[in-house]
Image 1: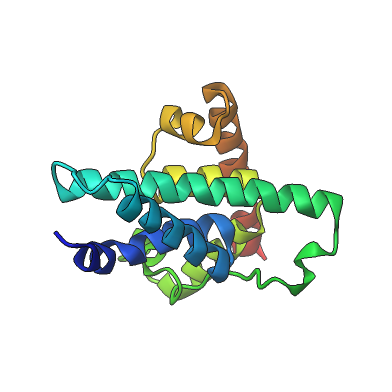
Image 2: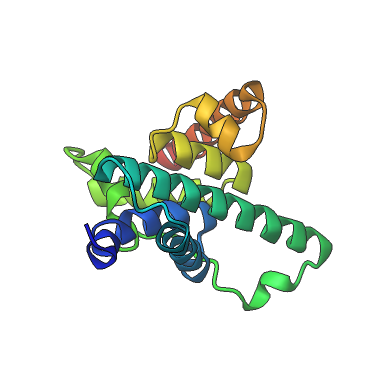
Length: 176
């Protein structure tokens, strides 16, 4: 498969993976582009099949997004006004249609998706990243630990705390 065909086939899912982590379209696109550049210039075009290529590409993009998120979080702590000019926004169903597929068959589908998405976006970046990698990207805890350079026990506890916090916030919405 040539480079153009690979890009056409994989750029959207890679972009959405980065967008869920970063919440910034510009940063997500940059991470996606960086992953493709590594693929095309690093001699990695000799994959056995397209699934192996996609898996490698997604892993590189997700690691890049996490590194960028760490850098942004560090910069925010050092300089609180750094992100004032950056577009950081809530991801909508139009931005990431894969999020919607988790709620097929639900009666109040659009309202629930919007509420859950808003609550997920409101989580601290660590919880949001781990939940996204586990729930949407399909990584297991050991893979997430390797990607994020955290201990597996830390990943499991952050997942558990993030899931609990997300559930509590969603339950508050349904009760009110």
